[in-house]
Image 1 (spheres, one colour):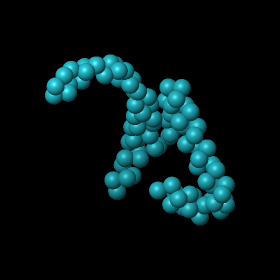
Image 2 (cartoon, helix red, strand yellow):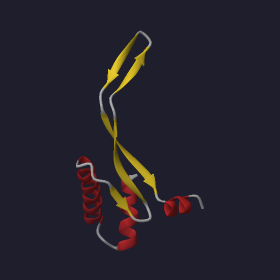
Image 3 (cartoon, rainbow, N blue to C red):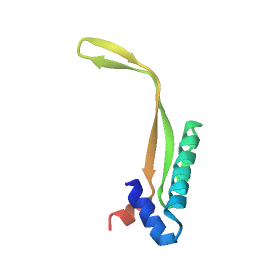
Image 4 (cartoon, rainbow, N blue to C red):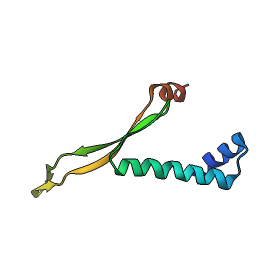
Length: 88
């Protein structure tokens, strides 16, 4: 959870909790701003975020066929190094 991460970073770095929270928020705001521009974000040894566009398609409701519009979704792929560390 967010507060636990902020507390851990504060303890490891000696930076105040308030400053750590600002940095934490800024990082995620920057990632989201990049994704809004459909730019991918790669965090070395952690993973990468990309925006995937799904084409319009037909959806099926039991009573009718409906047209689903194009949509975008954020995808995350865990880096191999992070995956190998998390499984230990």
